[in-house]
Image (tube, rainbow, N blue to C red; front, side):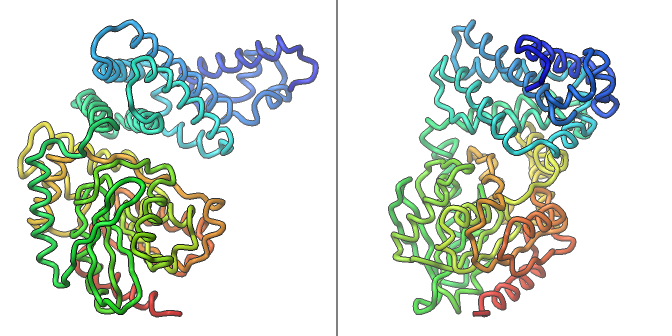
Length: 484
């Protein structure tokens, strides 16, 4: 590495740089800590600094990684010393550790935007290396008690909670600790892969499926139920439209039932044979197997569904979470897609965590603690730009009340993953979407998709689409699909 230094000296200097960076961070913050100040304190030249770290950002990223490993080490020691119920100990430990994190001076810098500035300049291989170390540390904690959580799920959940800490000032201090506790319990009680049902109780499941049937029967097009087998379990599909027309596969949004979003696209049934699968592991009539959104499992599931239907290739529509599933398919099996429509999709770029907390997660936490019609409406209104249909509001209420929510979105697609994807693609993004805002989604989509035919920004629109926008969406889809 560094010429002129022995191996022992290299190790010593690297540790001194990390120690000094952490100390200066707590005193001056990231922005005011300069490389000149660091090398002066450590006693090396500025040129020597860059033999150890390519940039100040990479040094501070390594400081964050070291703090992260230290925290997980403390968690491991805590769980080792307890004989209580392992899952409860794990949840209690996570909560205690995150309370302690808030007391550290460096967290104040992260709250002021340091993290975003640091992470922008970190090479992808460094991030991947960190994720592998993260999973290894989590494995040691979970293996001690033989807790059957997926390691990737736990890593994502801990990051979600950590990022929440970065926005404490924006969220407000009054109920912050309560909200953190609720998030932790929500993640690790409902994220347990050994649980047999995604529903909290049989009565709640019954209510959701009754409303599913009611909404299906209210569709103008007749859709019949069909079941197919996949490697992950049985999948229910609503099939309708022109039996002689080419196939169109319509996914639905996450944590909602199929007929909600199918209603948006049923006008296309006159020209297409629509196949609308209930996403496996989400509310509906498919099996309740929870797949790993950040893997290829949803793409494999889609291929199994198509094979069972005898479809080698098809046109697709993917709204919201379903858009993320469609993007995973584009990366995994691009040859299965003839054309793709992505409507306010996951899997490209997310909105600010602080906005999601303010508009969705905090109101949802308040509704959970103090359930009322008023608080329910507040927990939903951030997803809408018009009055919420009472039946749709009831469906969302049932999901909030009776479903162990899927909280992990499909992973971001990369340009490299999509290099073999050549199918024409139409993208709709909503200006005021709290989850996937147009200003974030559209630029990144243009960068990663080589075959992006058109992007449409829905002005003044939120995540759920109003009737005016749905008319625009259908017209654009019909034009897009009609071009050879």
